[in-house]
Every structure is written in structure tokens, then in C-alpha cells.
Length: 516
Ligand SMILES: *[C@@H]1O[C@H](CO)[C@@H](O)[C@H](O)[C@H]1NC(C)=O
Ligand SMILES: *[C@@H]1O[C@H](CO)[C@@H](O)[C@H](O)[C@H]1NC(C)=O
Ligand SMILES: *[C@@H]1O[C@H](CO)[C@@H](O)[C@H](O)[C@H]1NC(C)=O
Ligand SMILES: *[C@@H]1O[C@H](CO)[C@@H](O)[C@H](O)[C@H]1NC(C)=O
Ligand SMILES: *[C@@H]1O[C@H](CO)[C@@H](O)[C@H](O)[C@H]1NC(C)=O
Ligand SMILES: *[C@@H]1O[C@H](CO)[C@@H](O)[C@H](O)[C@H]1NC(C)=O
Ligand SMILES: *[C@@H]1O[C@H](CO)[C@@H](O)[C@H](O)[C@H]1NC(C)=O
Ligand SMILES: *[C@@H]1O[C@H](CO)[C@@H](O)[C@H](O)[C@H]1NC(C)=O
Ligand SMILES: *[C@@H]1O[C@H](CO)[C@@H](O)[C@H](O)[C@H]1NC(C)=O
Ligand SMILES: *[C@@H]1O[C@H](CO)[C@@H](O)[C@H](O)[C@H]1NC(C)=O
Image (cartoon, rainbow, N blue to C red; front, side):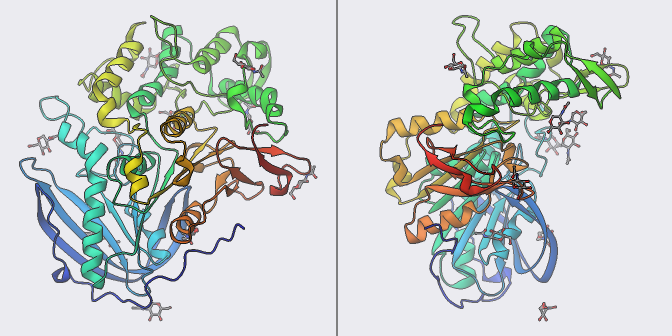
């Protein structure tokens, strides 16, 4: 039933006509002017390939034609590079687009290698700026300290679509045949780009794989700052070891809510553990090199972070909070600056609030007043939701185009609150009860952002290809911890992997059912 074979053979034995820029006729795109095209052949080129979904690195050797096209948007004076890597032999007839991370449209061109290694022609774009994932400091504001809407629009809504059009055109020139199927693969910002393509450019890709997507951007990105705001308001910065111990205590308390004691909270939204239960406990602390005691103030910080930001008017949730069982280390990071333990905010959240929300690179975010977080959150949503959030539940265009979408998200994502993905899928389901025919969502127990730990899908792209080309829709996705010690199938939401006995490391000890 769960064969991992890829789709049926595509075009056979089509070879590239040559690796030369002279073969390329740049496509006509309104408002776009191409400024340069280069093509360089690489035989047996060794590099460190970067997988996106999940993020994994491995050494590989590939032979490909490295094609770069530069273009500008009329009147904008931008300079965008689209890269297409084409296997020199044995092309499988497919195109694969690869997405970015954080503030980068593509984090690293070595992300093109896994596609090429699998015989696909692969495409990515830099969106006109560099590969810095953590900061938009070179492009968020213009030289008059105004938001650079041109770059923002390119980043959020345009660059990936142009890259797909350019990629298809280049591939057609190089082989004399257009790609039979096109796939997009992205995690985090790439996962948002993936959903953006399904929502806004439904004809460009046949299959879309979205991991840990940065959708709801205007809401969750300020939300990533909330833990720092809590600590600043309370003027208390727990040692990282203390927050880690509190999180561990929540795992011990809530592990059983899913029926299996496996060190993973698979049912995090039923976990109401309060850190006050851990007050007085002592832990060995690697930060101080001695035993430390969990205090009332420590517990207050953790409980406020788990509670999440609330409206001062209605007391309703502004956005989803961090869930229990999720590491505090990224967005509730605390560090010793040489003289004191203090907050070390996640740079993407600071950059967003400062540059895009307040248009002030030097906004004194650490001195935000008590009303400051809600103000920043509200302005972010009002000014940016429509450009950045990628939360339109109407996928009828994608359905009409025959596209297929696989979306997964880790239940212990320490950067992007997983409930935002669940919320989006539920809205799509409410919009179209036949959603499952073209869109399937999988929650990954214990998985951190883009899969550095927990049960992460091992081969989602193959399942997507099978769905698109053979019509076999995935009800389950195989998953594994990165070290391979634990294996389990991810169940199509809203089903869950319920324990039926046996060793929790084994796939056979769980089965998909309606609820725990
Ligand atoms: C690339 O490697 C293959 C297999 O080892 C070899 O046959 C081929 O000659 C190499 N090509 C070049 C240009 O080095
Ligand atoms: C591909 O070509 C571009 C543009 O010439 C260059 O910047 C890049 O380093 C090349 N990639 C490799 C792997 O050589
Ligand atoms: C990204 O930008 C930040 C902020 O300017 C800087 O500290 C960091 O070194 C940059 N990273 C890279 C890889 O250039
Ligand atoms: C600011 O001006 C400099 C010099 O003209 C230019 O190189 C740079 O790209 C500009 N920065 C932005 C964000 O427009
Ligand atoms: C929390 O649990 C993890 C995983 O078992 C362990 O590596 C870590 O040391 C624990 N942290 C503390 C502070 O006990
Ligand atoms: C946690 O709180 C929610 C909301 O009040 C409730 O529905 C759920 O039953 C509680 N879970 C547990 C395990 O007590
Ligand atoms: C926490 O902040 C420190 C200081 O900025 C940084 O070196 C470290 O990488 C951060 N840790 C995490 C997990 O982000
Ligand atoms: C370290 O953090 C403390 C408390 O936030 C602050 O008062 C101090 O100025 C910081 N020191 C340095 C060197 O940044
Ligand atoms: C592509 O190649 C990588 C590395 O060999 C492999 O992990 C992956 O499963 C392959 N298949 C697809 C469809 O990407
Ligand atoms: C479960 O399986 C793992 C891996 O085979 C093994 O190391 C472990 O001892 C087993 N646990 C139990 C309780 O049998």
C-alpha cells in the first residue's frame, strides 16, 4: 500500500542540448527586463547538499549545467538572480522549485542539489537580496528609513512565481521539451512560499510540499517576540537550564495524554501543566555549573509564555502561544552578556517589528511599554496581513488546476507556532469539505522546526510525486527521529497516531485513528 516507488517513467533519455547561454531565449514577463544570462557546466561537482524538508545535509557529487539569469523590474532598479541547475544526463522530465528560510528567498544554492541528485531540473531565486536568513537589514528599509515595499512584495508574493516561469522556459530551451511535472519544496519561509504559490499562482506547480510554513506571518512573527516581552516586563530572565527543566517537567506531566509514554507530547493542546508545580525543585544547571532552584518568578515567566499574548480589550488570545513540550531556547533565549543574564531575542522577530512594523531600525524594543506588544501586534496585522500572511483558505484555483498539496508541521516547533498551521487547514476544510482530494495535512509529534528533532517525515516528496503522477493520495507519511531510533507514521490530520501497545520506538506500536 505504501510503496515508495516514484511515479512512472517520464520522458526517457532526453539529454540537454548543451550548456550554453546562447540556447536560452529569455521569457516575456510584464515589467521584467533581463540583464544577463550565464551557463557553466560542472562535471562531477562535489558539494554539501542541503535538503529542505526536513533539513538535512549530505555530501554529494553531481553533474549539471549551472544557469543564472539576472533581471530587474522596470523602474525598481532591483537585481534578481534566478538559478537553474539542470542534470547533464538522465533528466526525469520534472522541475523542482526550492524555497527559502527566514528573510532569505533561498538560503543556500546547495539546496538545489537534492533535486539534481534525483535527476530533476531545479530552480531557485534570491529575490534580489542576499542569503541572510536572520535579518532584512540590507533591504527592509530604504535609505530614507521607509519600508522598502518593492523588496517586501518581491519577497512575499512575486519572486517565486517569476522563478517558476523562468525555470520552465529555460528547461524548455535546454531540452526542447517543457517539464512534464513541476514540484515545489519548501520549509519555514519556503513552506509559506509553497502555500503562497497554491493560493496565488495555482497553475505553476502540480505538486507542492510545505513544511513548517511561516504562514500567518504578520501574526506569528510578532508572537515570536512575546517571550522576550514577558521577561522584560517582569524584569526576570530565567537561566536557560531552568526553562529547559520546566519544559522537561511539562513533558513528564503530559506525555501520557496521548496514551504512550515515549518522551513526546503528541497531544500538546490538551496539556495544561503549570510551571508553578515545579517551584522549589532543584536542577543541575550547565549555565552556572551548580545546582539551581526553580523560583516563583521563573514559573511566572514560563506560564505567561505558555498562556500567550492576549487582547487588553477582550482578553481573547492575540495569537497562538508556544505549546508545552517545545524548547524555549530559540524565542525565549536568555544569555549572559558579560555582566548579567538578559534576553537574547530572535533576530527575525526584532527585525520585523523594528523595520517593517515601526519603520525604525533603532526602535528601542527592549524598552517597550506594557501596551507595546499589543500595539506592535495590531499594527503588524493591520498593515501587513494582506501582503505577508498567506492565509487565504480559498484554494479553488489550485483544485481546478489539478494540483496536490502536502503540508506538515512539527508539534514541538520552537519558532513557528504549530497551531497556526492547524488553524489554516481547518479554515480550508470549512471552505471546501472536499479538501482532502487535493490537500493533506500531517502533524509531526515532537518535531522541532523543519525537523531537527522529533518524528519527521522521511520521504514526503516521493509521496507527493506518487500522488500527482499515480493518483495515490497519502493517508500516512513515514517518519523517523533524525537518529533513526524511533519510527512512526504521521497520520493525516485530524487523525492521530494512537498507541496500541509494544515498544514505542516501533512503527507497528501505533495506528492512525480519530482521537487518542
Ligand atoms: C565523472 O565521473 C564519472 C564516474 O566516476 C567518470 O566516468 C567521468 O569520466 C567523470 N567525468 C569527468 C569530466 O571527470
Ligand atoms: C553558478 O553560477 C553563478 C553565476 O555565475 C555563480 O555565482 C555560482 O557560484 C555558480 N555555482 C557553482 C556551484 O559554481
Ligand atoms: C545577517 O545580518 C545580521 C544583522 O546585520 C548579521 O549580524 C549577520 O552576521 C548576518 N549574517 C550573515 C550570514 O551575513
Ligand atoms: C542605499 O544607497 C546605497 C548607495 O546608493 C545603495 O547601494 C543601497 O542599495 C541603498 N540601500 C537600499 C536598501 O536601497
Ligand atoms: C531536559 O531533557 C533533555 C532530554 O531528555 C535533556 O537532555 C536535558 O538535559 C534536560 N534538561 C534539564 C535542565 O534537565
Ligand atoms: C486543559 O484545558 C482545556 C481547556 O480548558 C480542557 O479542555 C482540557 O480538558 C484540559 N486538559 C486536561 C488534561 O486537563
Ligand atoms: C541565544 O543567544 C545567544 C547570544 O545571542 C546565541 O549565541 C545563541 O545561539 C542563542 N541560542 C539559540 C538557541 O538561539
Ligand atoms: C547586559 O544586560 C544588562 C541587563 O539587561 C544591561 O543592564 C547591561 O547594560 C548589559 N551589558 C552589556 C555589556 O550589554
Ligand atoms: C532525493 O535524494 C535524496 C538524497 O539522496 C533522498 O534523500 C531523497 O529521498 C530523494 N528523493 C526525492 C524524491 O527527493
Ligand atoms: C525498544 O526498542 C529499542 C530499539 O530496538 C530498544 O533499544 C529498547 O530496549 C526497546 N525497549 C523496550 C522497553 O523493549
